[in-house]
Length: 270
Image: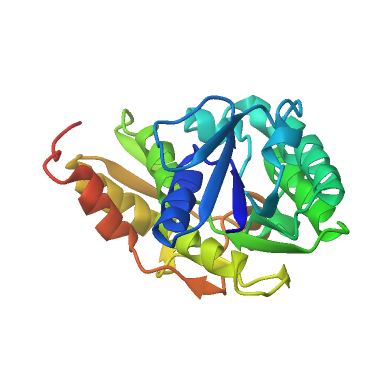
């Protein structure tokens, strides 16, 4: 049976991808800096940022799903001034370049790279780093696919939780359709094995909602009493910050339903 390698397999999206691969009967290997608890998959310990362990991870692999990334904003759940000036590239650029180079030396027949919707118009350094990594994939001699996804619900949850201490929340009025990692994982796994290559359909959430509405639903799910202050943003500025709407495939799980699952029984926690 062909072997599939997942980089970033211990992250939110990566874990969902691994679950679906195992469910569908695939042999799975995860490349990670530390092993997880699953015993039904193979683990190779290493680091995409340095290349340690990567050659071993690629041995006998047929398909690579590259879900690895390093976003300081996602790690901490909020933006700091430094994020407007720089973002580390060791994983998303140098690591991707190293991965692609080794794939050409091995038996890998397909690299599926997970990226982000709207990178061309985004101005944050992390988005520029992601775009640089994506362009390396598109130029690769190894057969490739690129799947772009909207930002994930858990990231929006983390960002909004950073506002929870404020009595009033300044929130842009722009439309947005974030998506759950479970829906993205289904989409990615389907495209990894359907025989298609190149730029694949992007994926976003099922609803186009104002960020004001998204924040209001979050506030209500948490049982908080906060005033929301709508802020108008120009289209260019909204795109620069990554606030776009995907016109591709739509996920199934709504933000409201995701919030209900996460915060049911926790109302009034702030």
